[in-house]
Length: 417
Image 1 (cartoon, helix red, strand yellow):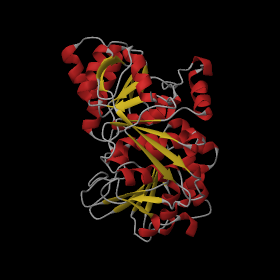
Image 2: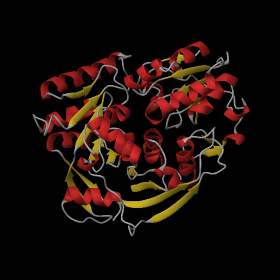
Image 3: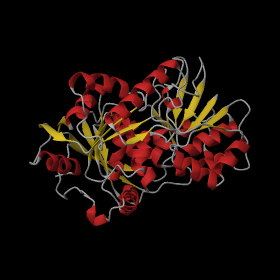
């Protein structure tokens, strides 16, 4: 059996097979300021008390601090629910983006089943958990019962080999994969990432890759925990390795498909408007003028991303014809970036530093694009109108490319600086 089948089998208390519909308990359920209110509204129609107030997490990250009356009202609904239900795991005061905050707070472990009312909940597969997004109505029933149903997904084995160079990053790996698989090529399947490149990869890069599994339609992305992941989870949870449920695929595990990706000599990858699978080598789009550059999001707002940007931006200035927004993924990362001197360098270069949050990624708060504007971003989606006006354009890239592009005012390969 593969990792996902093993985790779901353990929860179902029987051996499950792809295509089978099962109802299982969940270990953690999450919603944020954008999805909690509709979930709460539905929940209150079916139950008075949540199934377990210790297994629910609510995070404010999409419009924080509130930027409109509507978002303020949404957050008030959440605060009232948190108080009424005694939700102790609430992160509502600028703690950061849910998919960064939950692992930081020790809520994510290998072998767990985690659901969230946000499509990028698949991020937690980087820690060896089965995690997936769902709609607010489905989450309301989880809040009420602690259970949900799944159709057991088939799995695609995605083996990655080769070495990243000085100008590429894990973001380029997942963009390359999505470019080949397509936005619907892994629909309702498990994307199981493996291979020597994944085995040697740090926690943050792994999170970037699993985060974007949904962009090819996958039900979940998942990886076998390596030493760095185990150390990270142990540190955050206070549990010894022997206390963690580390699940690995059998050598004879069955997959619907096996794919191999060689990243040796890979150029930085760019997802061009208006689809995430419209991926090209940077050499095909170099010189494209940009009005805005953005480094942040649940995909690439981590400390390693900020470090990469720092290395590019030190002793440089932002082009006067563009603007650079930087949003650390969490308050913890923000503090680390301050202590390491990254923030001073960003400000000296002319960047705008924003509080941790998701706002610009979805065109909801800060960094909204106007008609005809172009942004190169470390975020995860570039759909038409995603970051503002429907006649704006978004390119997706790693943080090194975004920082270099901010300096030059056009999409730039960092190696050419």
